[in-house]
Image (cartoon, rainbow, N blue to C red):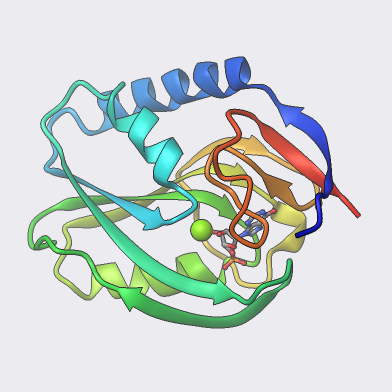
Amino acid sequence: MSNEILELCISSADLELKVDELAAKIQSDYATKNLLVIGVLKGSVIFVSDLIRKIDLPLELSFIAISSYGKGQVSTGDVRLRFDIDLSCIDKDVLIVEDIVDTGYTLQFLKTHLKNKGSRSVKVCSLLDKPSKRVVEVDVDYIGFEVDDRFLVGYGLDYDNRYRNLPSIHAVKI
Ligand code: IMP
Ligand code: MG
């Protein structure tokens, strides 16, 4: 197993401040709604756990697993459902929580998939956004940070399944 060289991009203190900010917005926007938070496995696990603990509203949490990447750093555009949510979307205001939006293929797939389940609304909160890599147009309603075209790891994001446990976000130097 090789060890990549990592460069710090977003500190854990900055992540915490951003999570507070996003949670406050979501809390006010969803005050009168029927919130169902759906975390996209596995990358959003840390983010969604921190986020929902800052949202002081009744809400439900579910997870969905999809895959679009092979072992490397490039999206194949071939999005597959690995496993589906365990809760009903009927009359729910769904908030998809993602780690990062890159080409947009994943979100495009997920939005259609979750709208088709009878949700009242479907919105998206992504910690990171890489707009320069977008291939398909998708609306992202809540964005933490816009980032450059570099491969990022930590705070849930992985490279070959490693580095998810880092408390801050780093770029992999190639
Ligand atoms: P998209 O379908 O190309 O938008 O890719 C979205 C998914 O690819 C994200 O949910 C991540 O799991 C993964 N991904 C995209 N960019 C990165 C990155 O820089 N680091 C780690 N994972 C990434
Ligand atoms: Mg992901």
